[in-house]
Image (cartoon, rainbow, N blue to C red):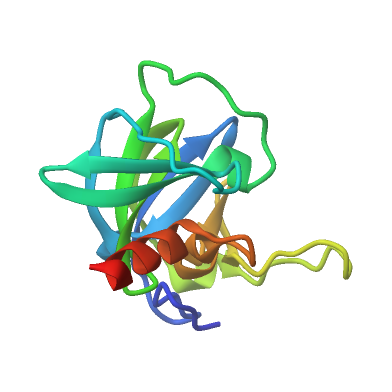
Length: 166
């Protein structure tokens, strides 16, 4: 299996692991630009619920996507461990709002299984696979697909539209 995060059946990949609720997710650390605490978010009219708005990070405007609502989980208030992960996705920087960041791990290609099929009504296209580590599983995200959103406009689409006006 080869995906956008560079995960293959024969190669190891270093991933940043973070939590949404009780579940662990992972993204290729090469896509991570930085991790910051919660910053003030400016709402942008007309965006889907999972696109929270934009932040000003050292003079650069970056869209913010709440991964909880993007994945259909209940929205929550920011907690003391809430983080923003600035990622390179779809050719631009976007921010993922997550419950907490856990660790950086090396995932062996042999520990990654294809995403199981849940039938035609369940879209798993944002998953590169499932990593097994003992009794734990981590969902490996295709961050380009996650951040692309949908036809109503994802965070990367928001940023691209803003850049094209300047």
